[in-house]
Amino acid sequence: MSEETQYQPFFVDRAKTGRAACKGCKDKCAAGELRIAKLVPSPYGDGEHMKSWYHVDCLMNALLKQRPATKRIDSIDDIGNWETLSKEDQNLILDKINETENLFAQKHSGKYTAKTIKNEHKPVTQPDQKTSDESDPTTAKVHLITSRDNNFSEFTELCNKIASAPAYLAKKNIVNNFFTKGVDGKSFNGDLRLWCKLLLPQVTKRVYNLKSKQLIKLFSKIFDTDQDDMLSHLEQGDVSETIRYFFNKSKSIQPFSKSVLTIQDVENFLSDLSKLTKEDEQIYHFKKIVKQCTLNDLKTIIRLIKADLRITAGPKHILEGLHPDAYDVFQTSQDLDMVLNRVLPQSSGVKHKDALHENVHAKLSLMTPVLPMLAEACKSVEMAMKKCPNGMFSEIKYDGERVQVHKQGKEFKYFSRALKPVMPHKVNHFKNYLPQAFPEGEDLVLDAEVLMIDVTTGKPLPFGTLGIHKQSEFKDAQVCLLVFDCLYYNGQVLMDLPIRERRKILLDHMTEVQNHVMFSEQKLIKKSADLADMIAKVLQLGLEGLVLKDLESKYEPGKRHWLKVKKDYLFDGAMADTADLVVLGAWFG
Image (tube, rainbow, N blue to C red; front, top):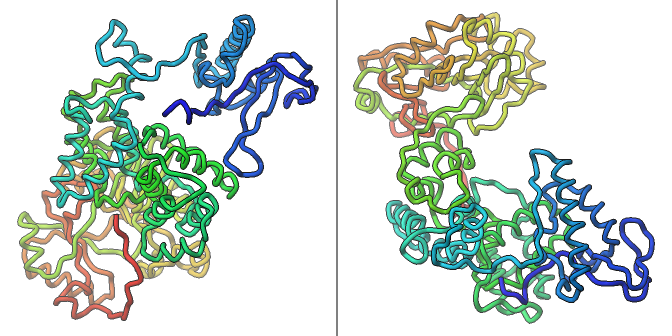
């Protein structure tokens, strides 16, 4: 960032009139007394700061009480007016700061490491030539932050290249080429973790509580522009383009002609924005970064806020561009941080090129949800026999809720198809029955269906009866777990085994607890006539359908390699229910 736009959160001088009161002790700062101000947002929401004065000792006490994540004095570059102080005053303040750092580190042992603040400025750039301390993590970190590969303009440029690429392979290669060679075409020296997170805002799911119309309201005030004019332009469908257009026309704030932001600047801005809920705070926060933005900078920042970069690329494009195995790892958990920890080097240095080619195997982690394996629509018996040449298991497709059960000792977790925790009233009582069903199962992961069973007839009740109020309406019904797969058992990951072996492990180790934990109904099928009879039986009983699984199929998270048979799919949809619908909108990204 240029010197003229550098923000210094503290300010130091000697009191002039003795009228300003200390924010800490409330006493006046006597004329001529050394004092430090903390710069805070102006209550008038004009994008400016005001000084909140402290005695030196009072500010140190305030810093000692704050949380580890709150902004502290990291160097003398954080203190405005520093150069006007005498050496004696500078040394006094540095001694106080370093003493406070040590006390703060003791107070937050293990969560914070004390810094030694010296009377020297941070380096603005890092020399290209190698030096004797290149292996020092601190030196490497400075190099990484100041690298051209971390310029936000390069992020915007990469997004444009990905968006213009016509197909998956081209998009993946663009990402891989940049992450390997960087801007200079030799090596990438940027922050790979942050790059990946910014390229996948739909995965990180940071919440800003800012819809398009709310953004228009904020920026109409920032640009001093008519809000109705902006809303009219918004009808074209892209709020980032609308804000870019009016930024270009604004007379109150002029865009930079050349980008000065880094991806770290933008990440810090977004992180702070996610914590703000009041309109005045949001306007003030936006003004700070808008004053440093080019037209394209602001457009891309808005798209990050909307979690839609409009590059028609998702986790598969970005993660396979990062590492050949990264997307497979991601498929097991949808946990981006876990993926990056697996595929990237843990050191703070920047020499990660070799790590991008090391083999990383995707594997299940107990108590972390796995993306469920899915099924594609099967339209005929012939299609099923072709897709399952080894024979198949035919399972009843129940009208319940899919759930993934994780058990580690006496701890249980239940995850929905979307990998979210399941409502407690639906699953909490299973902890009493799963130990009975798996007497030797210390640790396990099950794929199952939760539904209500009529205990008098043994028949499942319709979808929706699992609701907390609905359950009370069925006195003769019981919530039941119908288990159809086992992914992990006592330290052994089973996903790479064929389903015939996984099913055998399940049968060998599970004992049914009637109406509480039971096997899903399953039949071995090798002939087309048997499958046709099974389909007819299911439809006659009014059940939802069948799920067909090739006997040699592995458990592949997120893949549609099973088959599902429903009346909607048969005979080209002739048996499906009909509905008249109107398309109201679509997502592009």
